[in-house]
Length: 585
Image: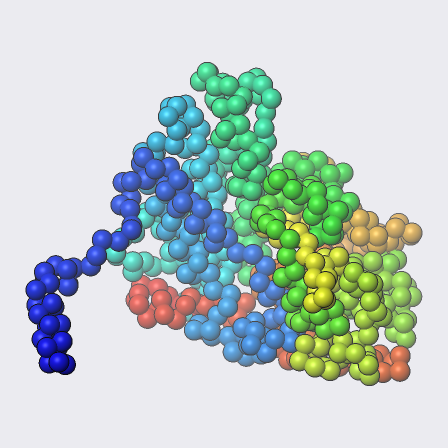
């Protein structure tokens, strides 16, 4: 019987047509030509790029601002000596180059896509989405430069290969790196094209007279315009976002790590940032709640794609969830306590009177180190004795704490004596008996980033108090940011006044304000490198016993000097002999 079954199976195989055995079955993959009559298919190329825009990775734990209790963290590994061209969690080579590949494919077909039955509406759709594509391509080039630009062994500041066409399997992918300057000029070119095609924002208009001049003679109704440029598209690329990307890219290019290979000046960076600021009403347009954009009042205002004044661009708010809190609440609030701010960062917050804690006039008391401090300290960091969560639970992080919130008590306890508070909704409940989530937003671009970019560049270009054509200076911007935070409000910010004519002191203050305002949002890892600042500062914490505060070393940092620049992936160097690695890697 077994022999009969075996012969039957052989017969079945032999009587099967050869093409059925060896030719692949037809797959559900449409040829690109299908996109010409299927606009959703064409738009999918663009949406794929949107999906690749990076969000906060909490790379702060690779700096002197934080450590993590997650022993498997890739950022912990690179901070402690395991950063290589093979193991690189900062890598953007694959992600951003893939995004650019999709964008290039889109740009090659979009003019042939029937976006709508109406020819004029098709033109508007085509304009808008080409503008989005150019803006996104510039953004991904920025991410590539941030992660992979650097000096090669001959001292040249190199960027990445510039690829402006969709490449197929048969194309030659063995491209040499372009200079950093070439890459910056490509960014500026793409942003200029995007700015010419995109609206300032996506908002509905109420009558045809509000249609932009370039579309006025097309016989469009205001409904036609809203169909393409209306509020339904609020989370997509706009001119406002494009201008902010240009400001960020210029700041990178003017910074010490890259200025040798760039024609972009501090003056350029300041002026680009000022354009974005002026569009938001100048200094008087600063959102008073901008430093707490993650709290209920701001998040609840951002429904239906709308933004507060602080937020330039963000991800979709999505549904209610508990993800961030589950990762970062302390153990007694049923969280994993992953991000542990350092004593280094805590010490960077000044006193409420504006003076650094090391200054003779600060009135800092090491016996009560959290008293009379910058209000941002307790807003952003969960301190010993703070209350948190829906029940305002007391959090005890001391070394002899009776709870698992104490220093190094269990695997999910703090390693530094501090927990993260910023970005977390205190009205989230993780108690298994009554779990309740809340809405969250993740910024892609914040105005505070642009305010501080302007302050940094303006101070370097013109000094602390000189104003450009905008009518405000680095000093004015820093004063406004600190006043919003509640710093120096009782004494006219005497410390700021004492250094306002000292460019070097102002530089340090601006960098520190950037550290505080943007902490835990993934900025410091990149800032230290573009400033060529020390990377090996030991991450410290505090051990509190019987109300005595002792600073402890928690984690050494092990970076070599060449690591101000990231590597080209080793796998790419092996594949393509035209690629040159950054020095040291």
